[in-house]
Length: 204
Ligand code: Z5A
Image (cartoon, rainbow, N blue to C red; front, side):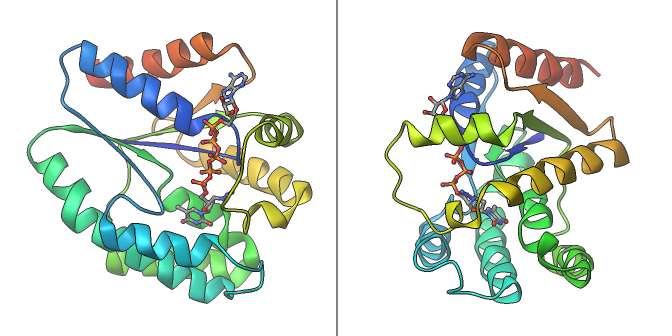
């Protein structure tokens, strides 16, 4: 089963990905926890390239191609082999982030993201948990920690509201695959809500 965690910056995806993975391992599942951009040596190198530097360092199209190259390597070396042997893969961001970051750069880009994804990757998650939080609250949480990859944070709060709406719209297109998780709760409650959605899917 391929599960992706999505949401605006600072919604709690990475923390919940670790907690949910640990809980599923305790249930006896083999879990591969990974992230994007990254997950392999080459993709982590591309991550450095794309997340650092000035906001205008790459155009949306260049970014899309770098993220896709990183994703292809990640799928070939980690995600596809793990899914083939029956593991649960939990990936902290995947193509829906490309849809909601590079894809929102212009109406034309949104379609191009899907075309490139279909040509180079094809794989979609079986289940996508969208960690839903007011971007202003997420921003407060992020301010409390040390940040090194600042390029995307430079996009500002307004973009985060547009992305949050984009995630809501995506959820409506396929409510069986996309589940909204209320990220505005104590950490344990968020983990329980996420686990409930995953176990429901595992049982079907
Ligand atoms: N990107 C893209 O443009 N296109 C793509 O295709 C892909 C990605 C795949 C990756 O950065 C960037 O790449 C990202 C999109 C872009 N843009 N940014 N920025 P990243 O991996 O470094 O960052 P991120 O994915 O946005 O994750 P994040 O900023 O680390 O946020 P998070 O994982 O959602 O949150 P967290 O680190 O788990 O939690 C944030 C803080 O809140 C932390 O101190 C927690 O302890 C705290 N927290 C978490 N949950 C709670 C609750 N429930 N209550 C209180 N405090 C909490």
